[in-house]
Image (cartoon, rainbow, N blue to C red; front, side, top):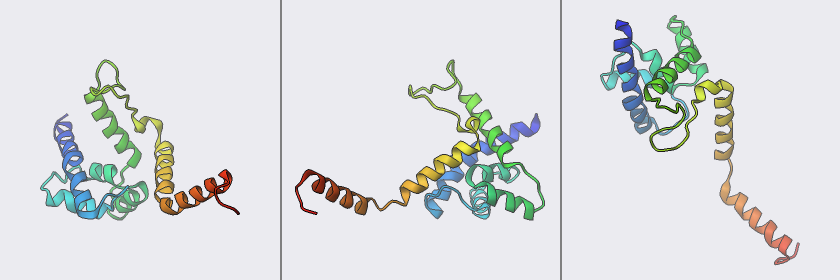
Amino acid sequence: MFEDMQKWPAVGSYLKKAGPQLQEEFGRKRAYQPMQVKRIVEELGLSTAFSSHAMAIDCDRPNFDAYHFVIRKPCDYQELRTEIAQHFSHKKSSTNQNESSDGHIHIDSAKLGEGFADLMDSIGDALGNIDWGHSLTVLRSDLKLAAGWIEA
C-alpha cells in the first residue's frame, strides 16, 4: 500500500517528464537505452526507486532484459508494462472504458499483447525506410506509361 503511494506518482512523472526529455536530448526514437533513461531520471531529480518502470516505458525488451541481467535485478518487462497500462487506463476509465473525453476510441495495446506492438513497430519501420520521393517518381512514370503519355 505505502509502496503504491510512492510508485504511481513516480511512474506518472516518468511518463510526463522523462519521455519528453529523452526526445529532446536523444531525438525521437522508438526505444531508448536503459542508461539514457536512468540518466534522464536522475538529471530531472525524479525518484529512482522505480526506475525499472521508466525503463519498461521507454526501452525495448532486449535492452531492458540485458540491463537488468547485468545489474542482477530480475524484472519482468511485460509484467511492468501491463501493470503500468492497467493502472493508468483504470484511472482514466469512464463509463465506456475505450472512449476518451475527446470522443475517440482508444484501445489499450498492452491488452493486445507484445506481438501486436511488434507488428506495428515493424510496419512503422518499413514505411520509414521507403524512399518516398523515388517511389512516387517511379509511380508517376508508370502511370504516364500506362496512360500512353510517354512511350516505353
